Length: 373
Image (cartoon, rainbow, N blue to C red; front, side):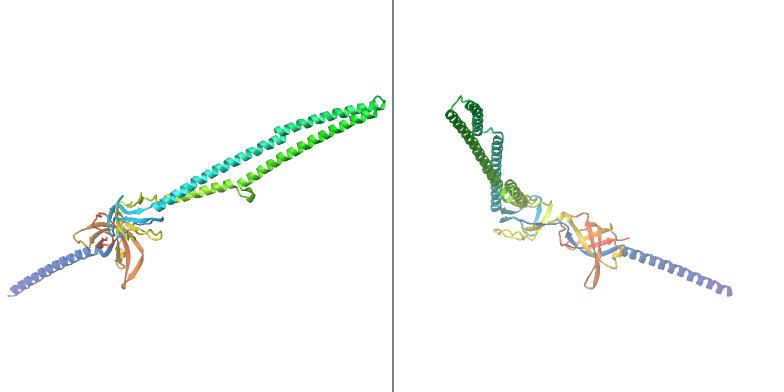
């Protein structure tokens, strides 16, 4: 009886041990399953984001123009070279032509002024040289006359001395001597007259040179301390600069002939500021183009999760507009500044889209899943 009782106790004890072991195994399995689920949840951070665009180009026209026709509307997709707006540039092109005519006229003025100045300078130089060297024909003749009169007078003076000796020897009469002396005095007057005529002629020649110099100074504007040639050159330079600036205004990548065209490979038109017939205001843009190739996701991650988000992390992107679509991305930047909104603090995260397509457009809302380690 005692043996049977002991056996029964052993059996009960064995069953109890088996049941405990079974429970422990189930509990261990349950803990393992719960742990895997928890890790899966912790391997990602969910957030809400918006599709944004990095490159937005404002199209400005800073010259007179009238809007002839608009070929796009807000939201229109455009390719490089597509015409968006046609402009009437007749007024501005006339302004350029007027400037070019003014430039031609000023260049002619410069050429004429330079020619006149060179002519006057050459004339002054030639006259001054002839005056200094007595090679002017009129001066040369008077110099010859003076030399002749001087030579004639000197010979007469020598002859007068001889006459005086003859007078002392009573070979000639006083009357003959006086007559010859009068002829010598006459020759002296002729010499004086010739010298005076030469002096007057040289003075007149110098006056001509002085008048030419005054004309030159007037041409060159030297009387006012300014070089007229330099002034005209500066005027030409200013006109050339004006023309260059005007032509640069219509030499933009987005202006072709009389049209505003897209200079982006893939763009979306937005913020059209004019209608047909409007005059363009230089202070107001014509329109903007968003570069679709530069779209990215901007997401706000709660501050309690931001420590787990790393640059380079893989991201799943699901657009609210079509949750059947899935996009891949990577975290490329984490803002260094936190923002508080609706009693919640978040940090902006920039996400590059790896498989972007034409479906995603700026301002689309998306759900994102950021994978974490």
